[in-house]
Length: 173
Image (cartoon, rainbow, N blue to C red; front, side, top):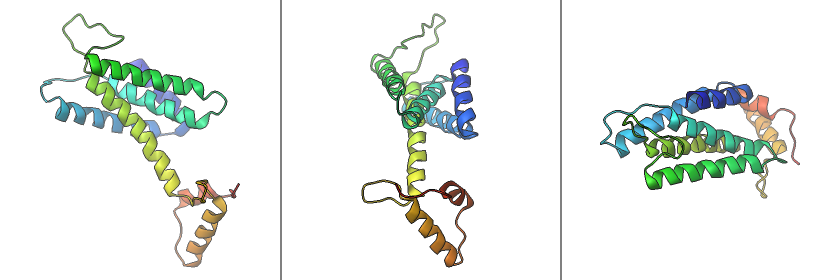
């Protein structure tokens, strides 16, 4: 699990900076809260498998969005991850791990981790769309957005610098 979290974190951090930190913080919180409230009979819980599921779910969704020609590969990874977590949740057993020392795998943690990674990606997508004007077809219209920024400036209100930097130089298709 540590290797999986490290690999996923390196990929996310290389492409998106500190976003991996916030993903891991969110996944750890969601997994911990899910175990606390949905499995109160569990006295001790430890491990990174839920966080790893969240990281790979996030990466798969991110790659589906980024790649156009090879979109099938991250879609396959996401489908296999969902199938793995679903099977584990339905059977109560881990798919790839055999525990001989009496330790139990908690499929709830994998499901919560996957949902946290997918949910984190969805939140980022919604935040991005909320920052931009949208045409009737559903496309982002950068020209309209820049007009709004100009009107805001004319009213003496400065737009957020991150929005201004991201929108600079883009036009409607």
